[in-house]
Length: 149
Image (cartoon, rainbow, N blue to C red):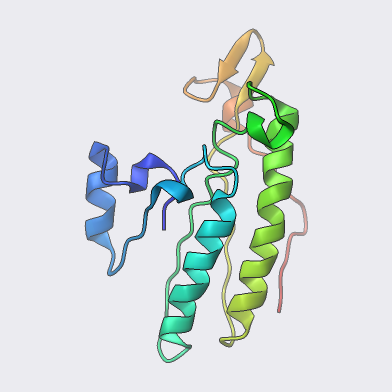
């Protein structure tokens, strides 16, 4: 389930990925400009998990889009910043907890959380993520992050 256009079918990579899986889900409300995108994604993920009901192995990939630009709206701002990205992460975190709680009702799960990059916010004069800069490549990793439900 994708939240960014790489999963939408609207871009060359987004046209390939859906064919690689049994089910692919992308809707405009999953996309980052939607302030409640993570809620919509979690609702869809839980519906899928309910449908399979623990009767077979299920690989569920959820690309959370809330932390992808634009995310200034989480601070009622027209621009993105490290603070608005942190606010987007806090928003998404509440729904990730709901997703994990909902999945646990279907038995045991292996959950892997990954991040793809961060954005530069004026680091050495650079802004954005489509650049080769250490600010973009070095994603903070929480130490000792273990979830066992």
